[in-house]
Image (cartoon, rainbow, N blue to C red):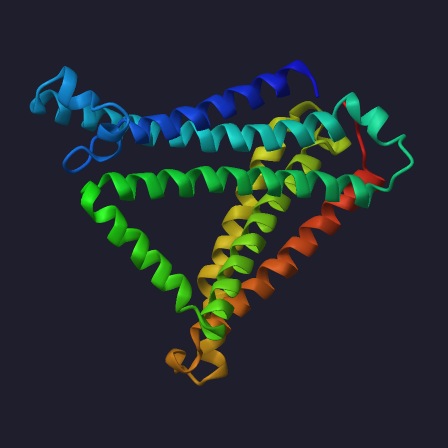
Length: 267
């Protein structure tokens, strides 16, 4: 990993830490978590100033979260671009591994990084939820969570599994869109405009896939049930979207593999 990728990774980790700290220092009802870690608002400023500080921290949370998402995308793009499409590609493609192995390793590492980012987001949401409550309500909150977990049956577990699988396939589809766009941009025909062509390809794919999901895909239930969309269960609809993501991801993966195998043009 070169210095640029190391720097981006370190900055992203610092941003993730800053996001969690900003959430922690927001004062909730009574004293919330900020009171638990030192009573900062009550000790050093009046209530009006505390409210002003909370407003600034709330805005800061949004900006830091946005920076975290952008850094995640930049890191994913840079890793694929530098490792496979630039000078490092000369080494990568001489290794005794197939293009499938290289693609799969990039996809897997990007997915793991996105999952870690999602965990940071969920932790921040959980902390903000606790901050919004009185300290006396925390026990009740965890009791409700425990009860929900205890009452999970096979049907609920199956529905949660479908939602998780849909989220996973949406992530795979999005990552393969990025990889295909970058691969198209390095085709020899577009040698002078690599970045521009990659961006145009990404926009074109996004528009086409949005149209497919917004019109054609949602029209399938109505077609199968003679216009009665309500007859199509939510589970079946989620399954349809999962199938769509699998097909799209496979097509984008095949296109990326074909370009890297037949049209490789290292910078």
